Image (cartoon, rainbow over all chains, first blue to last red; front, side, top):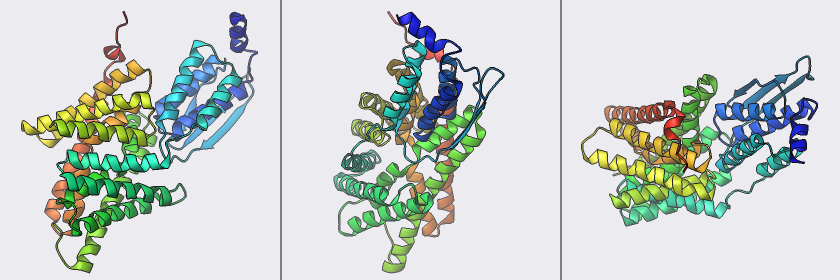
Length: 271
Length: 142
C-alpha cells in the first residue's frame, strides 16, 4: 500500500510540474517573509521540486522577491515572480516550513497535503499583543539591569519598553515609513525616560535609555544579512545589512533629536 | 555577575518570544544569550578589549546555537538571532547620539567607531563559526 502511494507521487507522470513549482514558491514565500536566509529558501524550494519529480531547480531569490521560470522539452513552461515585502519576523513559521521540507523528503506527503500544511502554517497564530507588550517591557528591564541599572531604573525601563511597543504596534504598521517610525520610536523612548528621570524615578538616565533601545535593535536583518553575504548572496545581504544600519541610525537620530529638543525647551544639561 | 547572566538569559528569552520562536526552543535561546552575556562580563573584567570580548562571546553563542540546531532539528538562525542580542552595541549608539547633541564631536566619533568595531567583531564571530564543517557539530547517537 505504502509503496504504491510512494511511487505515484514520485513518478514523472505524477503531479503537474506547474503545481509543484507553485507549491515550492508558496513555501519559499513563507520562509522569506518571516526571516529565513536566502540559501534556506533556495534549498527548501529545490527539495520540494526534486521530491515531486520536477527537474528544474534554479531560482533567483532576492531579499524581497522570488523569480522562477521553468520548462524543458518534457515540462510545461512556468513563470512566476513574487514580490515579498518583509515586515515582522515569525521564526515559528520558518521552523515549521523547515520541518515540513524534512518530512517531505522522508516521503510521507502528497502535493495536496503539502499545500494544506503550508496553508496552515501561513495562518499560524502569533503571540497575543498584551503578551508582546509585556515581553518588550521585560526585555528592556532585563538589559537595563544587565548594563548595571538599579531597581528604580529597571522599573522605568519596563514601563518605557512596554509603552514603546504599544507605539510600535499602533504606528509602525507595514504601510508606514520604517525610518520615520524608528526615529519616532527613539524620540518616544527618550522622552519617557527623561520624564521619569525628572519625576525622580531612576538614578541612571543613560542606563534606562540603553535598556529601552535594545528591543528596537534590528537583530534579524543584521544576522541574516551577514549570513547572506557570507553565503555569497551579496545583493540580498547588502540590502538586509543596509536595512539594519538604517534602523539603528534612525533610533540614534530619534534619541539625539529628543535630547536636542529637551535642551532647547528646558535649557539645562541632562546628566 | 550571576544577576547579569540571569538578566541576559531572561532578556534573550523575551526577545525570542518577540520573534515568534516556538516555546520548546526558547529555553535554548536563553541559554545561548545567557552564556554569551556571561562570557562577555567575565572577559571584560579580566581586561580584554571590547572587540575581543565581543568576538569570543559571539563565537560561544554561535557554537552553542549550532549544537542546539542539531539537537532540536531546526535552523540555527533561531538561536543565533536571539542569542547575539545581549552583545549588540546598544550603549554605543546611545552615547554617540548623546555626545553629538552635546557638541562633543570627538567623543561622539569615538563611541560611534567603538560601536562599529563591536559590530564587526560580531560579524567575524558569526562568519568564522558558520564556516566550520557540520560534522564537528554532529552528536553521536548511542
